[in-house]
Image (cartoon, rainbow, N blue to C red; front, side, top):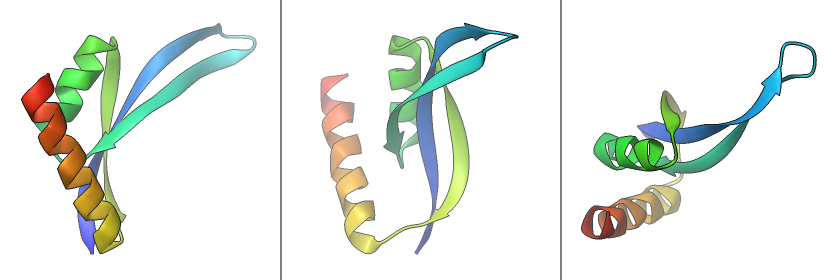
Length: 71
């Protein structure tokens, strides 16, 4: 099933000679959860349409629900 996935990243530094590195933090189906986690980690959100397995979708939905109640 195709779903929009919001991935959160944060900057790990770098320079123009060695390149810039980013660190993957988490993936979410709920944009507001992704935005909050990005803000907490001084990061950013990237949006992508992905083909996901139904079990993974269910796992992300549960994770987002937990984050909504704790953040």
